[in-house]
Image (cartoon, rainbow, N blue to C red; front, side, top):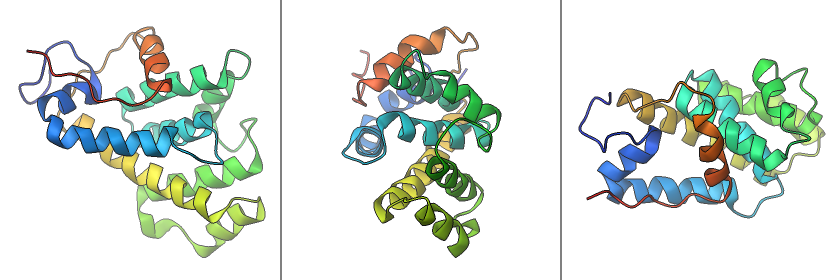
Length: 182
């Protein structure tokens, strides 16, 4: 049960943004730009960054929902990539560029100042662009905030993995502010 009086039965961040749509609108717009906006990183790769950071923050709701979105976006054949990254990003079957970007995201999750010039150079040596590095850092920072928002208010977190499948499919289609329930 959430720590505040949010709409019942609505899991995760959705209940929180329904509670205060004037702030939630901006959070959803940020997620839309970062995860669905124009980018040389695929939508699946950007969801994977969000999943990785949420896993490191031990935010079960965000990790499971964004993992479900990433699996949907990768498609049946490549969905296993998400679980392999969650298990060990260094040995997962992803590009060296994505490994370097996930390394940067992981450092941002700890503390932004943990990112070193060597981390940036490593990503650039794998052909990561300044825009990809920027967006990786912003996704990691934003999801650290989203994770703390969801967990700090004790948002409803489903325990059944099946609950996240439809959620992931909906999220894969974009981030739109939910309509408050009357």
